[in-house]
Length: 225
Length: 276
Image 1: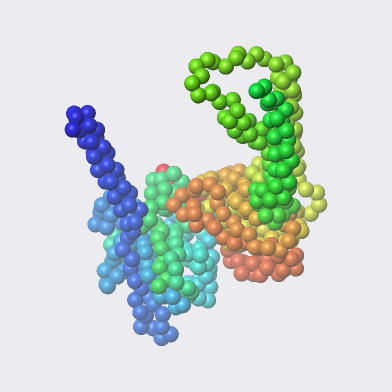
Image 2 (image 1 turned 90 degrees about the horizontal axis):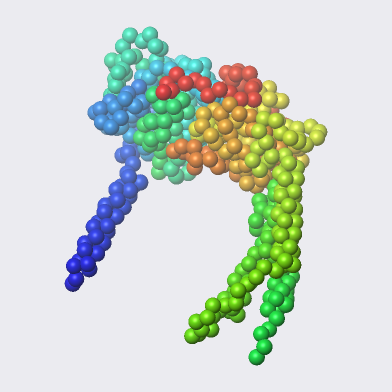
């Protein structure tokens, strides 16, 4: 084999190896999702499943070394808080959601979403009291599944709270928080995206970037299985 | 063997091909080009697309057939080493060419401009001050884009906002398209509507649905991670059904309507408490 042919072969092999590595990286990036968390069977009368979540102002380096300051949802799984936004719930069932809300208000850009929609009875509870809507400026986040017609505004912890949570995991027994509960019905099996409609991406243009644009923080999927 | 009259032979080939192709374009290709005729404007768009295709067909055939003809009949003979004879300008051909192409381009420009204005901006939106608008009563609906959903506000019905779009048939609809955050684009293919949704801009488009139907609402501007999810189905219904639906929406969304700011043509993208 001539010197030129050897060089050409070497360059070709190097390009092929780099190409394969790039392909593997892209494939890994495109197919990697946060670990799903399954709702657990509800002990309450009437059945259904429980899904327990919390929203935090900063996810912290323990859960997200790359973006510790980002706002995020977390889910409770087997008694522990885990950083995921993919939730598994059973089809044709009632899902009882409890959200511990530790973040302060940002305000809804569209006050239309301050009304509870798509839940059982068209209501939710805030710290034990039933409500149909909240003042738009008091919203810290929303839990919204547009395809299922579910929109629930989450009121924020007042700015003057004495013991706010700095970063996750935040503990309801320790930190000031709001507790929001509601139930919604699932239908057919499928994957449905959910998101927060409050522009809560601190430090990004108009609050729209960062955690609002990245799967695993303020949006995710509900897998109806 | 004498050289055939290429000009006459090619002209015959072109004319015959055009006569065959035009009915095919008119009856078969044309209807595939435009949107389904879900509205007066969509019908106009479909007609425009067909007319443009009919005008373009002879030109396309002229170019393609000449390429094929030249490849077959004007190719260099095997073994030939001489260059072909120099081709000098022909004033008659050049004058004809300039006149014909100018007429075609001008006619397309005039026809296109008339259709653009006459279409009431439904294909792109007319901005806040449309040059023309349909006469008579118009049902006004504000289309609000936000990451990542469309909502619709109805100033003539108490300013109620709805998560879905239902329109009355055979009514002129005035779409006031805007955005609360980034640039979106309202796209309703079946009704021939595509209008940019820009923050702090009221982009007006008019549409008149011609029959009861369902249609798809999409975003046609890459607007973030869930751009592809800005999708919904809308309906065109009878006037009676529309009145019943909007009345039900007014009751259902009464709490949200109380929370809404007064109706405005645009809304500044507030709050930006956490914006950088």
